[in-house]
Amino acid sequence: MMNQNRPGMTDRAGLFILIAFMGAGFVVGGGFSVVLWKLMTGQSISQMQTSMMDPAFVNEVRIIQTVLAAFIFLIPAIGAALILNKKPLTYLGFTQKNSLKTIGIGILVMAATVVLSGALATMTEMIPLSPGLTTYFKGLEDAYMKQVKVLSEMSGIPDLLVSLVVMALAPAIFEEVFFRGGFQQMMTRATGNVLVSVVVTSLLFSAIHFSFYGFLSRTAMGIVLGFLFAKSGNLWIPILAHFFNNAVAVVQVYILKMSGKNIEDGMDDKFPLSLLFFAVPAIFYLFKWYKNSIAKDNALVSDASIKQSI
Image (cartoon, rainbow, N blue to C red; front, side, top):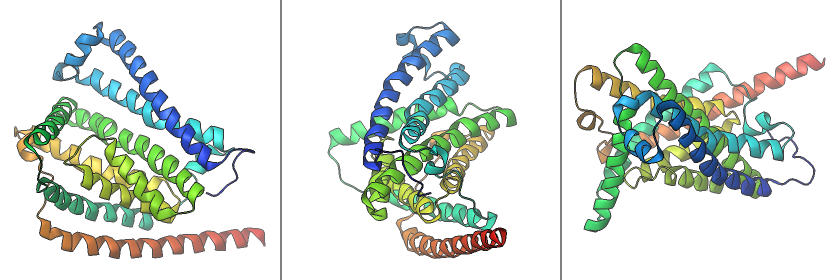
């Protein structure tokens, strides 16, 4: 994972390039999305803003969301890695291999983190806010829920599979490539401080979702994903853990839809605060198991390398 950068290129420069590319991705991706929407629907940009909340345009919305996320996260990370390093995929963490056991433990860590996030969501709602801020933050949550309802239009297994790709797999790949493979990787190599890099990346990861009530939950999830990557060097592990988290939510929505229940009433992601005393020790224990499994994976790789050289 620590392969050499191109001559004259530093990881600190890579961070600035990555952030600049992300900003450009917002602009270019936004413009391209408007053109793509026009081609798909024949509507203007003013009509697009309304139709994006209309379930009748669910397929178009899915395409736009995926394309925009690719411009904001995936393309900037790959572009910055290409400029920075001769082996961009290796740099981002796509070549390291681990056993199915290690990957499975990583997903178990994420399962425990879901419980932690639910308890933190309950804690966040206890934070006193002014009436104005409460109204503003609730408005953001309502807008997010409207978008979820549009993307969650599912009437059968084919729709579920499409939703899993658009709402679970694509975000997991795009966001992990940018935040863990790109930002965290560059910051760690630039500063030499894994803990600071994981925390800062997690705060950015949470802030980009523009959710006050989900801020602590996503920060905690980002920290766990960050350490899953930092300990293994294998980007596929946080990608699969992230996908697991997203997929659980998508399947939950599908079950609610098929049962004729209201999504807002059924999608309660809050857990009792008391579960913090279960989730935190469970995560620490599972991480210890995870690190031991990685050590065994690395030992097997070293043994295989020695045998090949003999």
